[in-house]
Length: 77
Image (cartoon, rainbow, N blue to C red; front, side, top):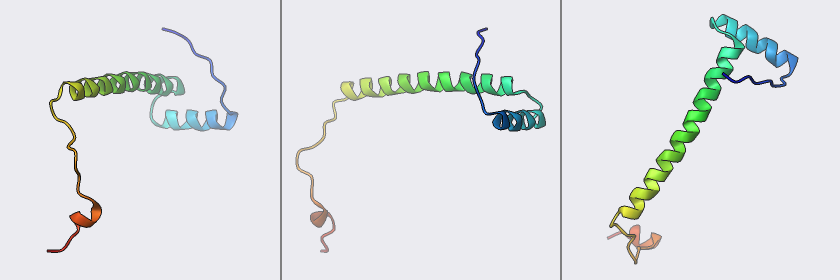
């Protein structure tokens, strides 16, 4: 497993330690979980965006030419 060194304000780190301790964990574990989710969400989003673009290109649907304007849509009959 890799190691990471970061700089954090002393007061922020102390509050993080207290909160983590109250949750039965450590700041290290919280950061590890965050970075794992951060990395996987980014990958998942990139994959999903690629899939969406691929499906869009494969779709036979096309945007129509004429679209009614606001006044026509709200015209009372």
